[in-house]
Every structure is written in C-alpha cells, then in structure tokens.
Image (cartoon, rainbow, N blue to C red; front, top):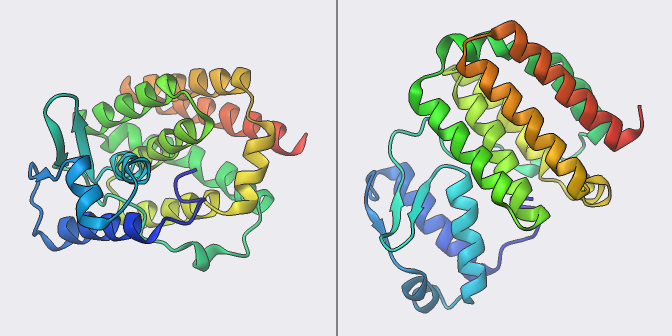
Length: 229
C-alpha cells in the first residue's frame, strides 16, 4: 500500500524535495525531475527505494514518467497527494471505514458525473490501466488508491476531497494492510478491476444512478471479502 512501509531517510528526503517543490512552486508543471541515478547519488539512497518513491509520487499525481524521456512534474492536478496524516485517523478501524464508505461514496456519483472533466476521466483511465498491469499486490494497491483519489478530485469539491483523503489515510494503516494482504487474491483483484471499470464507464457516460449502483456493488463485495458479511 502506498505508505504502509516507513520510507528510508533518503527516500523521505526525495519525497519532501519533490512535494515541497510542487507545493511551493519551485518545481513548476512540466519541470523535469532529476534522473533515478542522479537521485541515488544526491540523496544517498538505493535505486529500488528511489523507484518506489517515484512510483508513489506518480500514483499520487505529483509527477508523470515517460519511458525514454524522463520524469516530470505533473500539470493541472487538483490537490495532488494526501494531506491527512495517518496519526489523525489512527484509531479508525477497517470496519468503521467500510461503514462510512458505504454511506458516503455512492452519494458522490452524481457530483462526479456532473462535475468531472475530460482531464479527470483521463486520470481515471491511467489509474485503471496501471492497476491492471500491476505485477504485485503493492503496485495494484498503489494505483487502486490513486483511482480513489482521482474520483475524489473529480468532484471538484474541496470539502469532499478532504473527507476522502481521510479514507485514503485509514487505508494506509498497517491493520488495513494486513487484512488486504490476507484476502486480496489474484482472482479478486481481477474482479475489483472489472468493478472499477464499470464505475468509471458509468461516470464517463454521465449516468449517475448506474455509477451509484456500481459503487455500492463494489463496496459490498470488498466488505464481504474483508469481513465475511
């Protein structure tokens, strides 16, 4: 999952370098990020840790990576990244989270269907494609979380975005990660991907009622897999 494992000091400095640069404007949209080799040398960090950090930042919408061209600061993303800290939701259980999601997320279908832009749908498609190509559970969950963030951003409602950032923060807790590790089989991943596709397709067609129904089906399925009911 995106932040389940504590980042190494060098990887944390890389993250801070990029996130702070984006937030403060010193790294403008389209600016090229140093290469992996340069980041390894500059921050004294193993290459695999650099790659994981960049993958996280890409999933969160801070950067884009292009084979043969390099890594660049993303442009046009509304509120990239997750500002809510894990500590602020440390006592929320997975069961509490699922109950809240079943009450909140279906109601957002109409907001997204009404407010989402072409860029929002493009971002959703990227997340879907990356999740479908994921070769590990961690990589799949990285892009699964990114899709949920893309859906939140597509509301273009800052309060809603903030609420759903809290959902992401809870999903990054170790307790949630242990549950997912135990029950997310390759077969279930495929089913989740199909359900995600159905949600995004309904939203792209501006069919809020169908999107709402798809979200309910997906969340109920996830709850059954997690808790057996």
